[in-house]
Image (cartoon, rainbow, N blue to C red):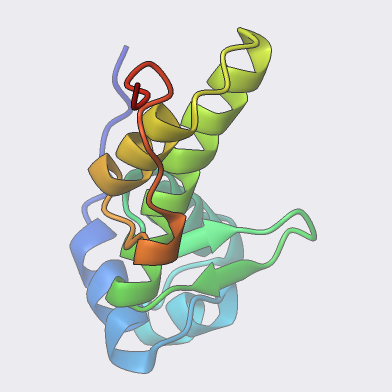
Length: 120
């Protein structure tokens, strides 16, 4: 079952971007909501967008768009690396391709040859 989006979601997201901050107090003051609703809004924004992340400490962190995109790419690539480790199939060429597919820039010094295409 899909969670219903709070009617103040878009207003909360706009405030977060405008203030470059994600805090319960900001949403309480600016939206005129109580603490539980402000926190629920932040949790929803963190779950549905890359603009906010919920830290292990329970604090919310605002991520500018470029940083959020980079973090998303790193998470995608980390997933590929973990899958390779679990399946014991660490192929440098495949991991490089995964990094590129995730949108990461791979410096030329990390170019790898296909181990199956060796010169005779």
